[in-house]
Image (tube, rainbow, N blue to C red):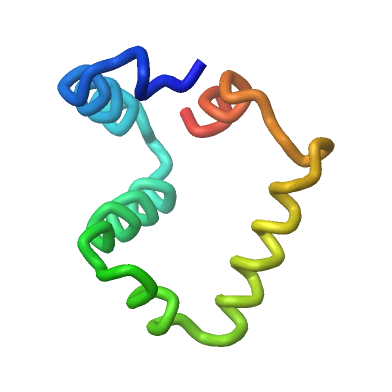
Length: 82
């Protein structure tokens, strides 16, 4: 089930805020801030701003994410992030 289909925008924002408030990992919080602050970039603009090494890392990560054995259940991920 896609979570966004089951929740309204307000509910999604509320859940996101709750998750952020529970986070204790400062590095993860900084990454989240960077990610969310770049949401208004035009399509492809962020890609143009990163180095070739960073682009390669993104592509490697994408390829890894396509392999079933690399997937993690969301519950395990959320426990790890706490």
